[in-house]
Image (cartoon, rainbow, N blue to C red; front, side, top):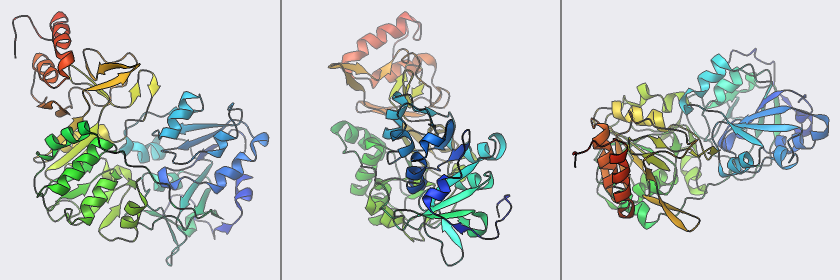
Amino acid sequence: MSKRIAAASAKAISAEEAASLARSGMWLDYGAALGQPDAFDKALAARKETLENVKIRSCLSMRPREVVEEDPEGKHFFLFSWHFSGYDRKKHDAGRCTYMPLNLGEVPDYYRRFLPPVDIAVIKTCPMDERGYFNFSAANLWHRAVVENSKAVIVEVSRGLPYVYGVENAVHASEVDYIIEGDDQAAPELPNPQATEIDRAVARLIAGEIEDGACLQIGIGGMPNAVCALLLESGVRDLGVHTEMLTDGIAELYKAGRITGARKTLDPGKIVFTFSLGSSATYAVADRNSDLCCNPVDYTNSPHIIQQNDRVVSINNTTQIDLQGQAASESDGHRHISGTGGQLQFVRGAYASKGGKSFICLASTYTRGGEARSRIVLNLTPGNIVTTPRSDGMYVVTEYGMVNLKGKSVAERAGALISIAHPDFRERLEREAYDHRLIPRGVTF
């Protein structure tokens, strides 16, 4: 039961009536991913001339936010995001959205310990079930903590969401103040990027390290999903899943019978995750499927919980890594791109797992202004955010090879990372490493 005083009964009101509850200066919360409201957002945007300085927390906006679209100069509303989608990134570039640094698995604690009460929380849910609960669908995350720390709770019900089983993946009608009808549109999909030849080359190296009974965490992007595709072609069996995001690749492995969870130490037989973004086929897999368990993010992402499963394999992308092993995965200089998410927590949880392995993967180069540039560098781009510190890095993989940084000196790290850089950049990187004494004179590898 929430710490909030239980309402006698939730009241059904229109989206316009719900939006009329907002006042200037309030903090509102839109939840995250599939849980973000649409009908309320549209109604609130229509009230813009009566409001100013309304601050809205959200995460991974999958559709345009009307409060931003109808207020391009930011006179009335401003977004604060726990993790950027492509839309949030564009609004950040336009000065309409800012990022909140975090480890994603800590966010429920932020609401309970550090953030002032939310004035109004508005979360999209499935319609009330026979037990009086509104299911959070495939977006559990920190929604329970938001409910507990909100002065008013509004649910926007939608018949377009999958109903997903999980732990604390719902809010009871007694904890809800108002119910509004949503538009029932299908859950927004996240296109799965087509794997490139580079993605497949990296994936082959990682897939070769995954054994029967391994417990997977798969990040977002072409490379991690390419690993899933290769695992479909391999003979690996009895995989488990304890992950942040339920991806299309995981859903395909499950449908092929490769994921059973039979050898998991924690939650055997269950695919454990905290949210999903993907195709309608993936949402169909999640809908009323007792093999899946959507849990709060402080359960899925906490290293001390992750490590309880044996042979955890964590696979995540980065965009740049320096010769000492610092991985910058969320910004391009001062331009924020995505967020820390759960990368660091899964890197640490996988390492602490018995027989666990964490992989940071990247293409060796990218192109800017028609010029190829190395993603392995002497120094990170000024302003770049370190997502995974050098002390935490384990396996680093490019299309040119795989190295393990654990136990290696600065000199050995530099040599190892140069060896998997694009051949066109190795000589310059080696010269820079010697010039800056990362590799002492006379030391060769």
